[in-house]
Image 1: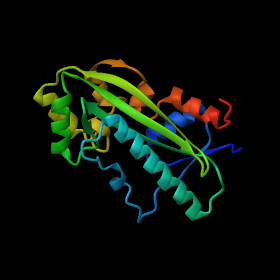
Image 2: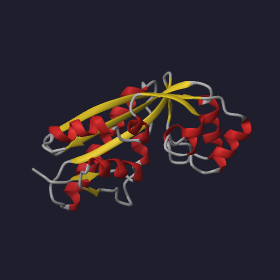
Image 3: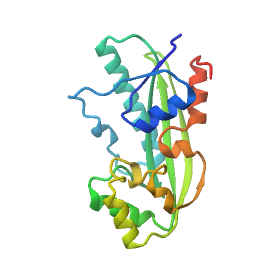
Image 4: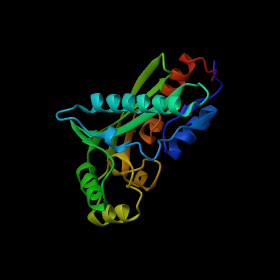
Length: 200
């Protein structure tokens, strides 16, 4: 039984949420030669739920291979992926400011889903959960949208916004898991960790 986990994520928010749970963790980040972005490619006609679960499992497989390759001490590995979906349309991370503006223009004044899959695994066992939340954006004016994009906050975020950042000023309603929308649903993650023997 390990007293820590590996977190295979560069997200400071996921680290913060694990710290909130009091879970000791080490980062297990990709090697320079690893093409992590290609893992997030959407397959033709893929539904958002199937997509986020598949990508999370791919990330876990890559992280377990990384752990073995580096010969590090054994411990469970945690991976997570978050995607924003409007109907069957998947909104990943924006490619540039123009792409961020397009995404936000499509989301403004509407409700969308935020899906976060979490997987914890060892070479012999893998458990996965899915958190689905709903977020409603109030209408944003062109000026508000442009100012938010200019702030730089949308870059690197699924759906081009951060619920814990300036975007909160435009979110009129949330149902589901706030921490899940941030990138790691704390309740579901705690259940997974308990199933691996962690006392929380």
